[in-house]
Image 1 (cartoon, rainbow, N blue to C red):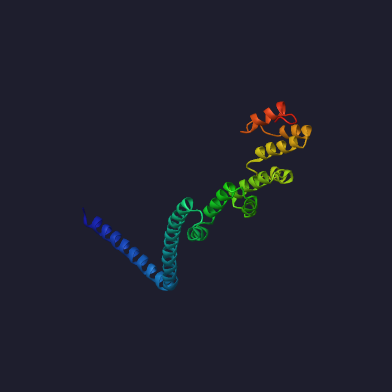
Image 2 (cartoon, rainbow, N blue to C red):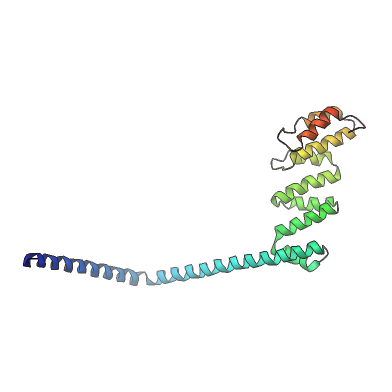
Length: 201
């Protein structure tokens, strides 16, 4: 390598070092200018991360405690301490327990109370179950017209039974035609439609 090439190489190295020093100076100025906001951001991010981890740990602990309380209630439904723990730590699981007990005890009033809480599927099924226990045609109809009704076809079948009992055979048959073919109750609806007669259904 000649002297000329060596000089060019050294110039390029010096130029690169100058650029690097310039970047360091810029970074240092940036840091000095935004030191407080950067520290504040880092602190907030750290506290946020710690808060999130703490929240997730609490959620996990609440789940363990509520599952233990639920298992206790399955053995002893009268355990008031376990019931209170479940109510505080896991309201949805508490509603499931309430629903199970209300169905077991044929408690239509409790089922209506659960239905009014709007706890997704549990409230939806509780609404149907209460109307069924009360043998209330209007409530069964109301449930059928609810777009979120999960057991709509079962409510139609139930209402048809009530109509047959009141000798409203033609109305019952019209109702049964609304049961969808892909429904699990479709065979029963068809049976009633063809063989359901007064006094023998």
